[in-house]
Image (tube, rainbow, N blue to C red; front, side):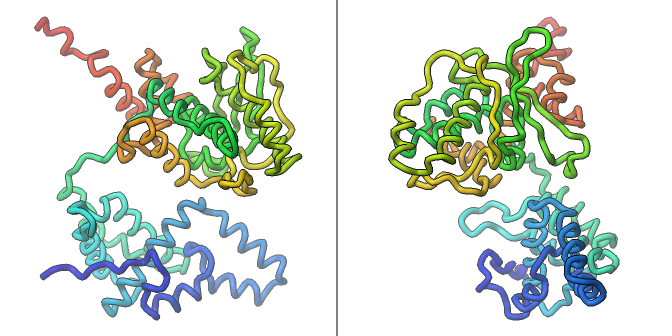
Length: 403
């Protein structure tokens, strides 16, 4: 007998009435107990209750909350369709739900709809909501754990890793930026900084999207006096609260068109002019007279006092958004430039910049310790995978066989 199809929860109107009602009762993070917050509002004044709600809501990253919320919606919809109780959940119901999801195929292809890692995240979301409600997690039961283990063993598929953006690929992408003009000049300068910092800094797509202008500054390298662009990362995947204060240092590029510091200087000039002039004919005139020269300007650039998102959205009319682009937009940007460069966009993603740094550095002879330092990797096995990809015969006993 075929498994019941999982409902499409991408559109609110597709949800059963019971699920919509449940979502209305949980308007905030699914990881925060709404009843506890309601009790706080009854016992304390509004300011204190709002402070509690704000900090509880900040306990998880926006991406985690977004993913868990979508996963919880899917679980609610399935339970409504099957006549099951979502909270508290029966472990056997959770196991059947995960098994049904594992057997679901994409309608447009023969591929699986959900990877094993996605199914584990769905289970984690169910566990997190139960924890927020003070309930025991149904996912700790053997039937759930063994189901997830069986799914992973049955699939036994290699992870679908995206291609790295190597140095020559990066140059091709930079060549595909919009031509000078309006508003192409804005996009051209913004995307140069994004691609160069993402590649040289080994940044994740969410780290790139979250950068602010004030996070980056220029310092002089102690030994040589050469300029260095230092980027402070407020929060990262491995340091979500920003306690460690991770930073990356980007040296002056050998060429003007691949120099992160020159690109940053060009873009902050545009941000400053846009803040003063707006998307006006005066800004168009200013941009027309500011075509980047072929010589470096990083030695004379001392930084900027601007604040705000480093990578704002840009409308087709040349208006800069007050909000930064999203991590998904970073991935789409990499795919778009890959396609323009004649490459398969499906083979690339936002992670391709970070993977490209590690692979290119390994090709250049960097040690795993050096790669881990810049990329902020804590697991040497991850870096070793990039090194083996770049130099499969390095430190390999097969070269000693005498074939």
